[in-house]
Length: 296
Image 1 (cartoon, rainbow, N blue to C red):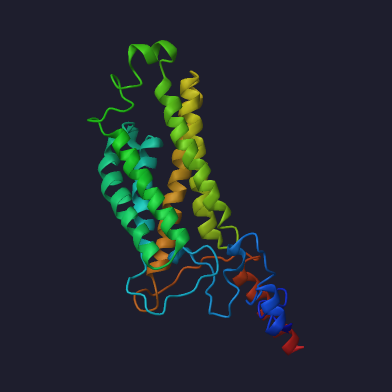
Image 2 (tube, rainbow, N blue to C red):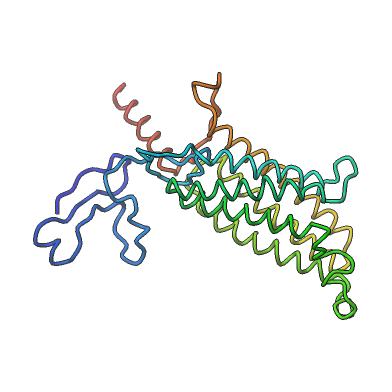
């Protein structure tokens, strides 16, 4: 077993060679150990160049830049589509200027937050970003579904619709609220999964999913409260969801700007604030330690 020091300060990187490798059917580099139960544990085991997490590329962890990428970075487009649509609906949820009807969000949800974000997710798939493809395509699908649900022609949750027949109203006059709660709870669960994947990235990327997660939770609870007849609580929860949604929108725009701006088009670049325990954070700490030791 020949080994070399890990420049990032982790465990030793080793490689099995010769007869031992053949006997164990194992010949690949170790990065913090090898876990045969999950091949994703070894995805960064080779010596290729890896870049640190960056919300502007919708990359929550170490990632390999494409040497011959034929596409531009699709992440800012998807983030911008998500941000604007979330901003509009959050204004309605906050009752800004007394507006309570969410129908203005329908064209934005279908055209920009839905279709354009879905396309950005597909382009993320083309450039090899699994996380970006999953997140942007899914939220694009969310906005298309939500836009359809709010379209008066479909009347999915409105008066006279399938949740307001004599049979359903005999069981629960506000059954539509619980149905909407189920819909939003599912997105809360999905967003929590994505949130867990950002715990080794940057503060701005993590906070985007954290605030979005809380927005889904508040809005879902608001619908459940309405079904239970707690209208005052429902209004407050919906407004709280609008507040967290507004924060998520601006954080999405922040990450989008970080992905668009560079030294050729902007007079300044914005920080993304890597977590201290992220690979970039550990690298920075090691560099500072090495500098202090050199000065001493």
